[in-house]
View 1 (cartoon, rainbow, N blue to C red):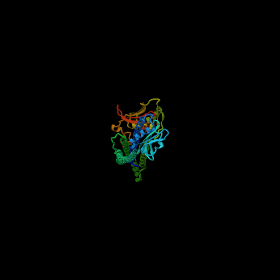
View 2 (view 1 turned 180 degrees about the vertical axis):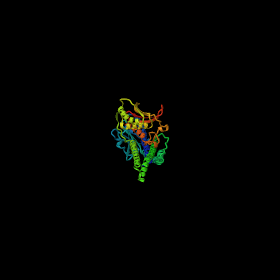
View 3 (view 1 turned 120 degrees about the vertical axis):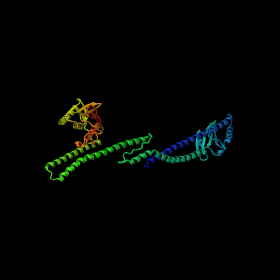
View 4 (view 1 turned 90 degrees about the horizontal axis):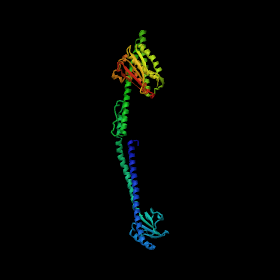
Length: 455
């Protein structure tokens, strides 16, 4: 019974059979009630006729005359009823001829109506009533009625058996029909593989739970396909990023190995190149591990209430050194006496990364500005530069991993800095975006951190 189709079929058959059995049982009791009520009515009619015959004799009539009146009536219906008359002391005064010497059982006395199984008479239905000082019993046979009940019960068993078998048949086809969308889901799931992630489950237009489940599963497959493509792209890009520094290290090592006569200055330069590439590899590995921890949700935030004026002025001291070295001007604009809950170490990393990018793409004499404000219960950091900006088609991708804003040959970046910034900001419950300036050339990067966000 591990098959859902089998279980549904069996449950359908059992419920259908139980329903029919309950209906037939109710019919059996209603039939018995109706028949006994009809027999009681006939017995009552007979009793009333006997009463009227006795009363016709008058109040002064003798017992013999009254018994004669009963006998006269009993002769008319002797084939259908038993009659017995007793006096107030219980002495039998009259028995209908069809009773012979047999006397009605004592169990019938004291009951207006009662059904009773007698060893001699079989099933009978008795009615007892008083006519003056006479105790009159009118009794009907129930053998034919009980035979009808037996036939009904046998027929009911046959009907229940037939209903069970038919329900198994119909239930099987109905369950197969109902589970056809599930079978389609199963077939589609079997087709899905790394090379066929585009398969989707057909959505039945039924408006029921199966349709909603198919929609949810397709949405899940969309997310899985997107995640798979992201991992696939990330793997390809990571392997490409690792290949270049590793190739340089290998070539420099081969150069040292194959040219032992290199002069010390050339040898030192080769070793220095190797160390630079190894350092680049180490930085890339650290960045990838950081992103992996963030993706896995295990990156912990050391959030606390930070006095922003002090935090930003400390940041400004470091940035001023970088700006002055490149002949640039750095401007900080922030409100006073503002406290916000965040991880100061990670947010400092975000701001330094964004400001470093702005400095890198600015020419001497230009200004880089960091403006801090509060909008709609969010803390907003805006980093503005006066560089060339970013092509519109690239704006939506600059926070992707291994996406560079400049050719690889001209960059010391591994293309992970902005991706790390986005990861940190999202971990604070915020978001980061970029747009080109409208008033002049340059780029604006905005970081939004909600007030006491999910940190």
